[in-house]
Length: 138
Image 1 (cartoon, helix red, strand yellow):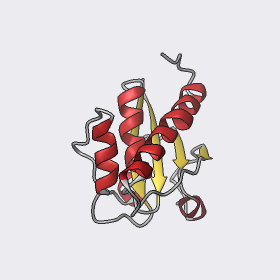
Image 2 (cartoon, helix red, strand yellow):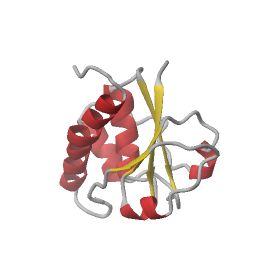
Image 3 (tube, rainbow, N blue to C red):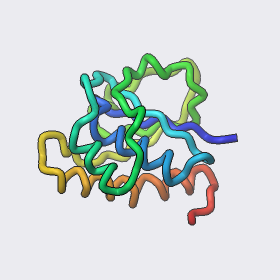
């Protein structure tokens, strides 16, 4: 049975979206990622979409979601990727383990910043999830 990880950010437009796509691509189907924001933006940042496409990752279906819309998902782990989300992390209906792994916010910066954050997420978050869920890394 796949583990579900919720990647939580404030705007759910950059870091959490890239993390969702990376986890689903690299660790799927053993791990399913969903992302949400405490104050979601109207759309996913163009830089985040471009950085994912540069890595050959699908971006279809990525859109900012409010954390309330995922409250009843069968979440096994919450990952906050910005300090603000950690401070405003909602209370879930049941106890869910959570980790905080902050990443630089590239919003409004050049594409190279989004690429660096994408690569940082892949280098740090994915091995941590594989370790926590007992997955062998490829």
